[in-house]
Image (cartoon, rainbow, N blue to C red; front, side, top):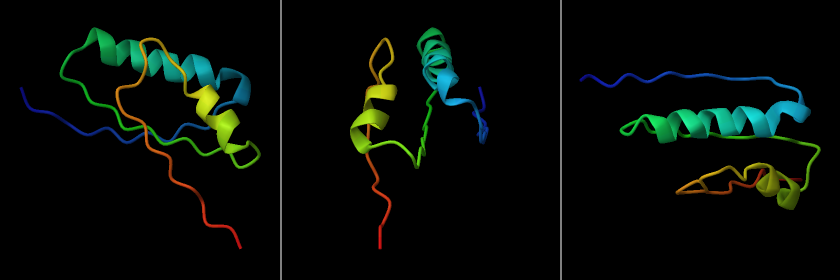
Length: 71
């Protein structure tokens, strides 16, 4: 089977961020062989708050934090 790349930029209300990330994780879990790379940018949250929002079940197998350069 040929793999394709799907690029999606989603602008969603912050109240739905957890549900959206869980939806992606559920799809990933149900379909072995899929690989998701997700980047979340929430300018008005602290780093700790953002990491808390990324909690899904089952846990993500890899997580990397890229800090935005501040001046």
